[in-house]
Image (tube, rainbow, N blue to C red; front, side, top):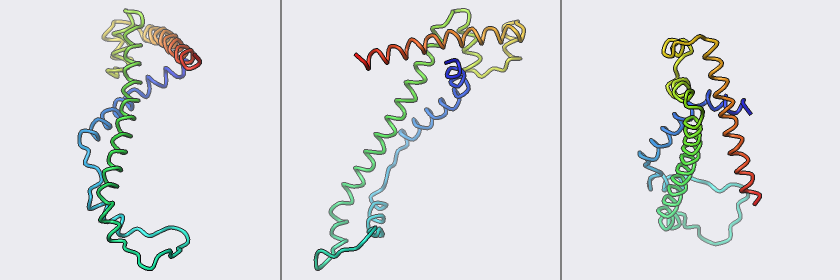
Length: 163
């Protein structure tokens, strides 16, 4: 399971960037404009076999009646999708931060600097006045503790799902 925690540590900047991107998309959401919807409906062509069922096809009337509703539905669905994705990323980051705060108190600032602040091992050596071997030892110890917390979390989720 340590590969999972190591992957989370490695992907932490990507998760933060994804969260920020999703927040930005929601804050600046413009959606599909009604004109875009009209253009899409006007210039779309049916796929597959064409079967004429009525004498006159009134595409303009159909577009006029439904474009506003379709644009609203598409925009609502897209916002809902963004909100769900943002909630997933924020939950993952919140749990990871909670785990980082729950490890041994002597490792918390060290791991915060390593993971959140993205400090290099050289900078950690200088800041904490420790050797490279000690940086490695602290990192391994913290990953083992994080593994335990994630294993406990997984057991709780499985227990809840099976109950």
